[in-house]
Image (tube, rainbow, N blue to C red; front, side, top):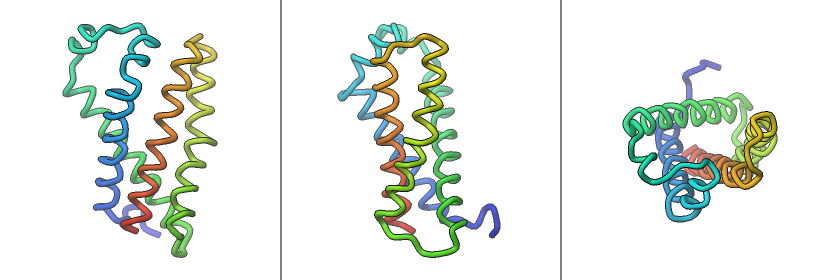
Length: 136
């Protein structure tokens, strides 16, 4: 299979879907709790280079989405909607959550921040899996 033989529309839309999840999660749903857990004020956040932050985050979302699309395509068979969503969830639960958990343990970050960020990554991958399943 060719590395770039994926549904690019699904890759971009899934990345956007994950991005929307992030906007909701770190905005109205968990925004205040997240700011408290990382020790940032709204003023400090506004001082950040938002173009670089959002642009970089979207590039990472595209990479994650492409990797997920490539993973699905590498199976060589058509996967059901639920298998794609559960696979995406499993990737987050089995790879992403342990990775950030390990980093947070060694950097002595709070459990609250871990659960906020872990929850986001689980939802991010579920959203991406759903978009890939819907368009795939």
